[in-house]
Amino acid sequence: MKYSVLAILTILSAALLGNSVFSFEGMPVQYYGNDVYGLGMGDTGNSDLFRINSNFSNPSITVTTNKVLFSTAASLGYIWYDDELGNSFKDDGIYLPFLQIAVPIANHRIAFSFNAMSSGDLENQLDSLFVKENGDTLTYSGTNRLSSSIFKGDLIYAYKTPILNFGVAINYYLGHRIRYWKLDFDDSYTLDAKYEIDKLFKNPGFTAGVSKKIGGLSLSAAYSSHVKLKGDVELNYGHTPYADTLSLSDDFLFEIPPKVSGGFTFKFLEKYKLAAEAQYEMWEDTKQYDKNTLKIGAGFGYDPLSGYGKWFESIPLRIGGYIRELPFEKNNEKIMEQALTFGTSILLKSANKKIDLAVQYLTRGDVDTNGLSDTSLMFTIGITGFDIFQKQHKKIEDREIPKADNRLAE
Image (cartoon, helix red, strand yellow):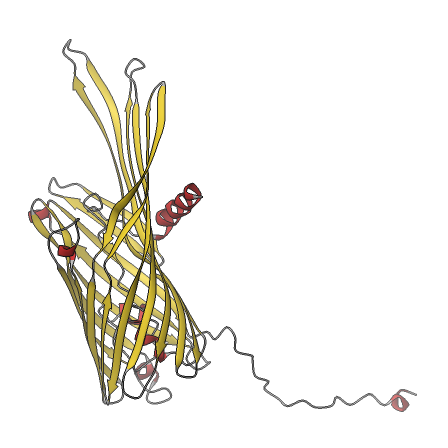
């Protein structure tokens, strides 16, 4: 069973997750739970109670759904890698951030969320040679590959009251890390070698959150628990003609740090919004990294009233940005990530149904200090608000269809 799960996760991570030149240091690509609307507004949204919000990272925000909600998205774009030697490489990627379903029952909300929480995928190859003691030259090619990811599934309950909105989620984390090395020698006398270490880890946790709307201001706060992920490790090695597989279980393979998040959204003049949020991850409580990290984002949104003004005045627009420090270092220097975002929406004829669009320009690391850097341009499209259980209303009333008069045909 565990091998089937590992195969599924490997296929998903190869197709769905983002890449980074810093992947050998950790999992640099991180998704914080915002929907496409929020992604285009500085990657904010965990406090926006002024719309149907499918950001379920704070479970209490689920109260914004008033119908059975389905929401999902896809991101695609290009990533550029650079190093201090002047080398550069361009890659493309596809990323599926989330899948959300919410069901309202009076003041209660039940929801399910599945998202790709973090990842790091990278492969490099090189051709090299070395001179043996007898003066012969030995040429070989080397492959170094890494695939790592953590997925998170949430079962959410939220309750709406006039005083405060409450929400709690049971989180289940499932991830893997596959490291592969291979040496392939050109001559037939030197033995080729390959190694692969497969780690599959999992464990549950929880998230609790509150939110409140006060006039044109909405506030939120949430806490996610510290989780130690445990699972299985498998070592595969091959030295022709020898090969073997070693397996073991480990109570510690990865840790999810405790996290505190919060933010505010201010709506003014009926159609303008300002939003800001912060995510504080306490990595010092884990064995992996020794410093806490902070991500801060802010954005501005223009949500015009439908049916008023000229056509260009009815186009929703959003802009923003964020800055984030990664929990690991490169060249003993911290790695910073910053992004600029832009977003808009295509409103559909049915109420509360729309297509959201977002563009993100991101840079991660610095060649001068870290020796490496990432630059990416990603385009995201998402759908929100399709009530999959709603019966289509009839446009006309039932009526009797008159029968043809046979006498007219005589």
